Length: 296
Image 1 (tube, helix red, strand yellow):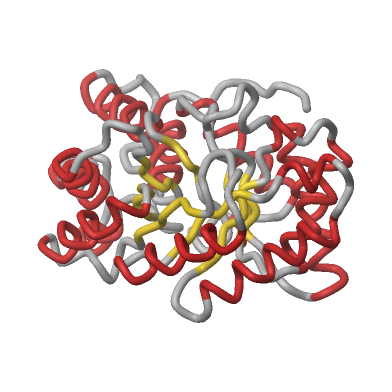
Image 2 (tube, rainbow, N blue to C red; image 1 turned 180 degrees about the vertical axis):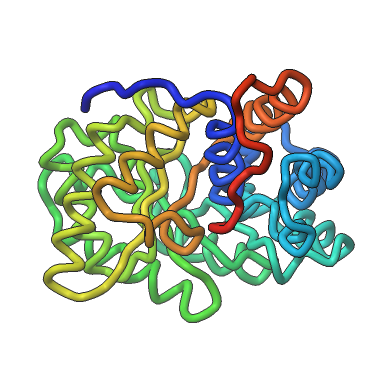
């Protein structure tokens, strides 16, 4: 995948705001507490002050929609996120995603993994990010990978969307990435996700391209659109723009919406805010006055 020229000035701000609305703002630390989850939700709901957005030319009617696509936490912290989002009157606007099924390794019995899904949903999660069994994938037992994800899809029912984490850095090769993508989509996944963010190798553009090829083939065969979520390694606004450009040029602009594309990131939001504030404080000469926010 060739590198492209850098995007700067107001154009970078427009891309940054788009990335913000596609980001699952995430905290997945062993030291997570109710307090830092509440802080995460507050920032997800109101990431950039209204006066800054207005100065950028964002239409007032769009201001309530400038928030992250979701928050993502461990199952034990879902109730904390739900309580805070309800307090902010954002519970019906910002979904709560929960990792589950023995995240990040997935080295638990199937019953335990399914129970974790149920607990997360009962606590208020409306999206479940599961991890596939990499052991099965590495020995080529795709039927069992498919069967397990089917059980996870069933556990989600109609109450939660299912995102399936492939852990591409642990699958060995791109053929396995493609096959894992297909197995998950055939089992009913709403999204396929690159990584847990805990592997040595996380989201990479080449792996993303293999997953995109699978999504395209699945749409061709089944007529079903499946989302993509790169997670881990997307740390800067240029990183995000590279992914958005790849999606636009392969799957098309219809995928650049929260129902079909997400970033999983813990630090990206900070960089987006820095980019926006940097433009406000030091606008580049020759930039147009307003950000084009028509797509938000």
